[in-house]
Each structure stands twice: as C-alpha cells, then as structure tokens.
Length: 229
Length: 229
DNA sequence: ATGTATGAAATCGTATACGATTCATCATGG
DNA sequence: CCATGATGAATCGTATACGATTTCATACAT
Image (cartoon, rainbow over all chains, first blue to last red; front, side, top):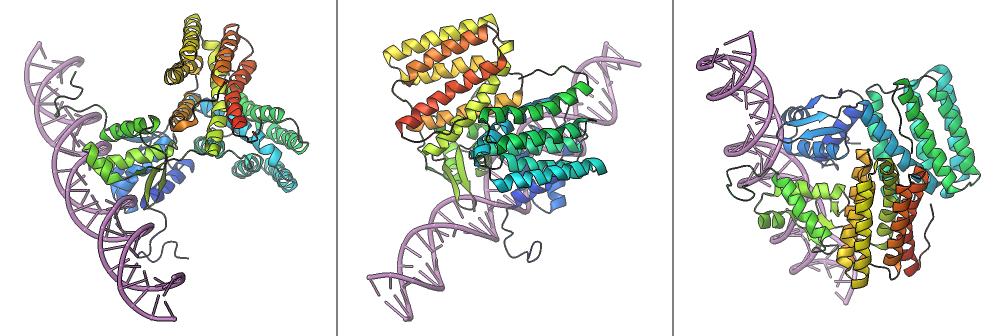
C-alpha cells in the first residue's frame, strides 16, 4: 500500500536512501555503462530531489566501490577492467570462503535440501540456456550456504562483494564457456561436504577454490597469469 | 607551505574530510567514549563549519562502523561489547591472513630487516612496559608484512579492520596478561616463514592464527567459548 | 601550425534556512 | 497514583543560494 501514493505521508525511507537505491539498481542492472558520468544536478532534477541527498547517495556508492568520485570534478560509474574484476573475485573468494566455513556448522537439513533444489534448477538453466536466471539462482544458492555465518561483518563484506560482482557481470564479464557446468558440479561437492559436517577448514578451502576456479577460467581465457593464494 | 595560512588558498582537503579526520582521531584516540552522542550542530559550531560537511563525515564513519547512526535521532560512538570485538578480530584474522599471504612473495630483504628491527623494539617495549608504544609499533610491523599485498580491496579492508580495532583498544580492550610476549615470539616465526618463502597457504594460516590467538586469549580471560575457524 | 593564456560554462562544495521527526515533559483524567 | 495525550524543545532532513574549482573552447603570440 501507498508505495508511491499519499505524498503527505512520510515515505519511511529518506530521499538519500531512495536515491541510493535507484542509482545502485541502475548500475548493477547495467543501465549505466562504466565510465558514465553522474552529474548531481541532473540526477537531482530527474528524481525531483535536491542535490544534497543525491550527493550523499553517491558518496555511499563510492564507499562501496561502485562509482569513482573525484573532488570538484564529479562521479563516474566505476569502470571494470580485468584487474578490478580479478581483485574483486579474489577478495570475495577469501571472504565468502570464510563465511561459508563459519556458516557450515549452523546449517540445517532444510537448507541442504533447498541448496540441492536450487542446484538442480541451475542444471536446468544450463540446458535451456538462461544465463540471467542462472546468475540469480546461483546467488540464492550461495546465499543459503553462507547465510548462517554468525559474524555480521563478514556477512556484510560478502554482500558487498556480490554487489560489486553483479555490477560487473552486467557490464559483460558474464560467462566463460565451460565454466558454468563445472560450477554446478562443484556446488554438489561443496554441499556434500557441508552436509557431512566436514572440517571447517576443508569447507573454507573448497568454497574459496570454487570461486578461484571461476576467476582462473576467466583469466585463462584472457591469457593472463593468475597469482595463486 | 600555507598549511593553515592564507585562508583564500584552498586547504587541499575538503571540510568534509577534515571533519572526518578530526572525528576519527577523537574516536580512535579514545577521547570520545562509546555511546557518546555526536550532535551535528554542536560539532559544526565547534569546528567552525556548517553542518553539511559534518553530516557527510559522520555518514562515512558510520560506513566504517565507528559510529552508529539512527535516522532522525542522531549518531553515537559505536559501543564495543565483547561480541563486536570478537567479530572484528575474526574478520581481521581472515582478511589480514589473506593480505599477508598475498604480500609474502613480494616482500624484500629490507622489509624483513625492518620487521625484525620493529619486533626487537616490541621486546624492549615489553620490558619497559610501554603498552601505547607497543600497540603503535605492532601496527607498523604488521603493516610491513601485509603492505605489499597487490589487491587494493583486501588492503583497504585490512586498514578498516585495524581502524576499528584501534578504536576499541582505546576503550580498554587492551591487554591480556601474557599475550604480548607470546605475540612477539609469533612475529619471529611469521617473519622467518615469510623470509624462507614458505608456502603461501602456510603463511596465511600462520598470520591468521597469530590474530586468532590474541582473540582466544581474550575470550579465555572472559570465559566465553570461541568458535574456531 | 602549435603552444599558451584568457575567459566562460559547468559542476562541485558549503552555508543558511526551514520543514519534519523524535523524544521528553507535563498536565489531565481515570 | 498511574496511564494517556498534548505540547514544546532538540535534532535531523532537505531545499535553495552562492562561492570555489575545474574544464573546455577560443584567441593570440610565436
């Protein structure tokens, strides 16, 4: 109710947050190409806000690395070169590995079930070639695996990492040929590992390797050396 | 030149940044106790700025977790309970471990020398009981060890972690009795490991364990179970 | 023709002003 | 005596206005 109606009523979310959401969606949605220049006044006018909340929104996006901000010059959508992609993936491999390991002992049978179901969905997406859907389901699957991580900081970092990654995927870092199928197999192994209450360290390394493998596949395709960790 | 003179000349740093620095220093310096209420108008008046840059500074501090911000209510210096300390240490153990491992292959003989020198300093601080100085030198030592990490994201996260940690130390999470001495010994081992170009994974685990050990010492003293990773 | 200086336009940075929200206080009725 | 509602102060949220800085185009000198 009253999602956009009754302007008199407070919108619950401040305009800063609204602006933040809108811009974030546009960037992660791929509507704004990398390097696109974000002009405060233009955005403010378009949204019907003043520049102040827009400014704050942009600073938040800067803190998350989605836009690059230069003093007295302006903000541009963060360009994603191969290096940035590498760094983001590498960071996420570490963080998500830790998160998954910390979450593993707290996972429930229901979670395992759901994870398996989603992985089956992924297989279907493969066969019917639905990359968009694949990405979405993939997100959900991993969210289940690391979701119980009891450390909110780490959880937050994982979310930020995924955000950035999604923003990049949109700008065409999408797929490496055979990777998706292999990825699904690794999911099976990872799930089995978690279900069997394996050593947390082993789980951490498996989760990390899962992401590193995607990274390596990408790097291999673009013929660059990948520093191992 | 003209660091504070010539008001016509631009101060190089914007007022937002200045406000950010001042507040951050006060919090990490322990001048502002946890729970202290940060009122925009008061701070603005004190610094001679308007509220707008102060507001932005506080939002930045919020993003780093140093202050808690509640809409239409205000900001307070983030309270540090044992749980928060645990989570921060745990996060940092993961991140700093990875950073140190990634930096290890790029370290130079000079770095190793400096690290050893600083560790000797730490020993001296121990004997003459200078906890303040110990903390500072300890920061420097670790900064050398992870400094060459080629992944700027990870490096950034390490810095944020140290910041938060310093802020907490100030509010008396300082010392666990025998821990400092053991810590110095672990530094020796870690440095030796890095010097010998050991396996990066081994280095990562050593660096992580080094921090986890401090955490465990703290938890043991405060009789709480520490979930292992 | 090219490099440099000058000016104007675009954009950000901050101050001030006012509206909106929250919270505490106090009066009033049960 | 306690619960409840109204009133006011304190504070945040945002709009508007203006100054500061950067950038780009243009004209001039070499």
